[in-house]
Length: 428
Image (cartoon, rainbow, N blue to C red; front, side):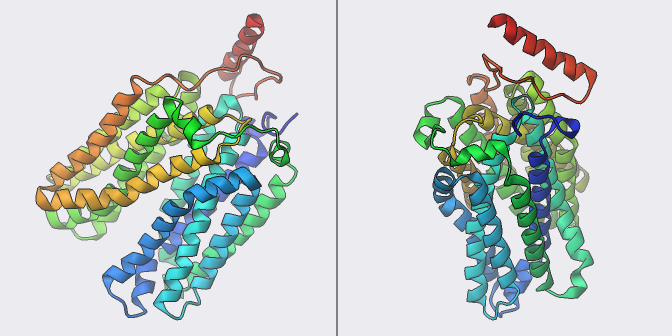
């Protein structure tokens, strides 16, 4: 039986568990480095703008290199692009610890952005390839949850290691990535589903072919709106609202960001599993609406309690939205095709929202108010919800099945899957 359909502990392939663990390590290390990066840049005697450019360079290279990463996935296969990306980030991050000038650090972080987009595109491709069809939502939720927990834990670990200096987090992150690369290589080298990547019979899905499918453009807009609202505008303006509008100490911004993460992690896994039963559209629509309401509410927060509550609501919405986005993309591409350009386009849409959101909404806020700016941001998510009202459901049971479904977690789920398999047999 292939690795894609065999049933392991709790019904998930071992390769998926390895990728989930690697996602946690990657996010943990990123959260470890991100808080000290501006300070490290400032230690070279540069101003705030130059220090911010270090962060922007990483994001810009992710955006610019995404199409090339998609092409690499097509030519080399997901596994090698994933491992290559991890190694590039590991080497560039470790070398950053030994930077002697600002420009050395800038170049190395830019290289890290290239590696980051390589493993981001290819890891999503691997998840699509390896996930049992009946559990795509569950896997997407688990993967997103591990990444979120790692992101939240990183700064906490970094705080405990503050006494080691500004360079230590880079070395620790690099070492962790090297270990993760070795584990992933050993775990995936004999994977039967991935072995097919060396063949030439896999159909290739281009970006243009993706646009011909109604759900794919809807996904691009949804991911753009999610990136703009969650990773761009929220991260840029919540700290400013806390200090400038609510007159709270800067440390409370971290509390607000944690409130969002708490709402997010509370529903990520459950919403992914439920989308396998009820379809992606209900969670895409509801998630976009709830996240949009929370985003708009943040802009009109009169006090800290309101802001924290709105952040939790936005986190709940994002937690409903994200796993279904990834699962819907997996439904569109499928496990028997190679869709590198479509995966790259999906990632680019969020990166574009992350880059443009703070700039454009920042101009609106300067001319009007935080309320207007966050309302416009929320309207992007409302538009995404409206679009999905007219887009067909992406989750569909296959017309034929050559192998039994993976054994679910409990008797009720098993009966549901078994009944579906019998229905498929009757139809044949």
